[in-house]
Length: 231
Image (cartoon, rainbow, N blue to C red):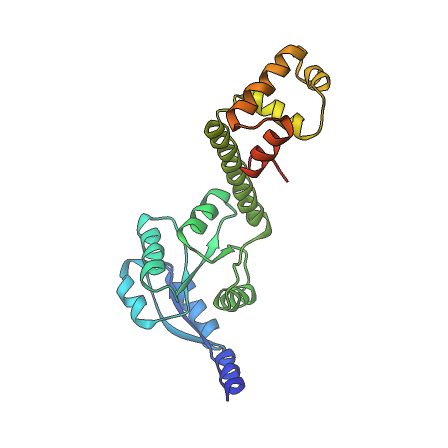
């Protein structure tokens, strides 16, 4: 019984609502999509005629939206994410613009199709997004990777800085602890940091006092345990 129900759910058509300003484009897409047994077309209109309530009532799986160029369209996508989470938005007819793409991702759009996308690509995107995938051109995907990578590096830097502040370590002491953790001697640390051995010895003593231990090895272990140094 369970297997049969799963199969039926898999075979059930994806319900789609279309919002496009250009009437000819809208009618052409309706004509293409209504021929598909795997797609259930539940409505279409211009953006100026649509309301969030109207789309919510259909409980559609996919909203096809022709652009994100106005604030109203952004509000529509954001409102659906809050009020009709089963409805996932796909933008089509878009330019390969990283700024617009990242804005769309931030609003919760799950699919981003360029102006040169074919009807076959649109149908594949409808099914992919309905099944939980995110659809976008590879170059724009890279811009998302770069954004996440940059955000990660910035957050990592803030975490390190906060740890230093919490321990009371200066920038120079942070450098010194890193070298201590690698097993360098006072002389080697002095050469690496262009300091005198006396200055290095004083820094190590101050670090030991900050973390309240009796040896440099204990100091390294305590600081590592606090997340400042890698294991």
